[in-house]
Length: 150
Picture: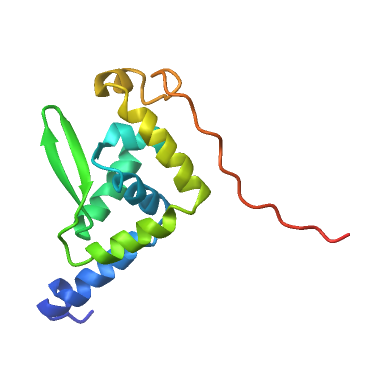
């Protein structure tokens, strides 16, 4: 295997490839859309996407390595937010604006509004179960039905 020069592994080309890969997963796009509403912690994001904490943390790590999100420790919680100062800030804003029209992202946004009203310790004690934490679930988004021929 040929060793690549450092500028190909760590330069603008590599950073752009990493950002493109990070944007290429539906769950990561959903997380970015939710973070577009403001900072959230892993337990809040996990409750909305209904995936394992380790899975969501892995997606957040990928987004952080791509320079799309930043993390900040707040007491015993780690909060994630969009990187609005990075080289892909404009691209990120456009992607989030486009996602506003998606029914899954709209449902997520509604759930995030409910999750923000629940204290983090209550949400974690409820094992990120929105109903147990007192958050009314949003109507499920459905994929458009295919038309059948008569």
